[in-house]
Image (cartoon, rainbow, N blue to C red; front, top):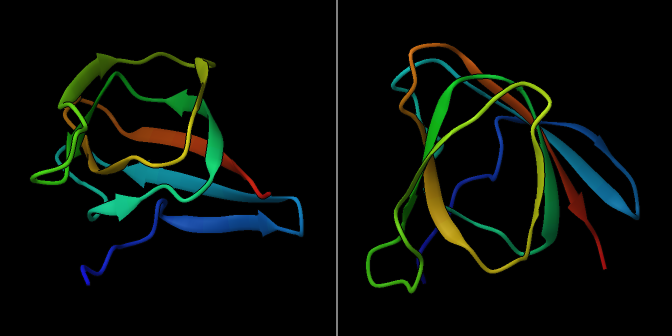
Length: 100
């Protein structure tokens, strides 16, 4: 069985309903390959460009996107990828996992 890393840089808060992560990446830095077991929402605090690179053989797509402060979005569980800061500035976001 393949081992995955964490979905964020560190956990800021957790209770029985949510787990809140911070993701903090300097230009060129990346999170290890990870799998999203829970639905989640994201709030971009800072950054300009991010990539999601799917696991080899997965049905996911390579995504590169411009991001901006206060951008928010929600995603469904199931994705397996690594996040890479492909921008020119620090990428920082808060990710809120919704526990079942």
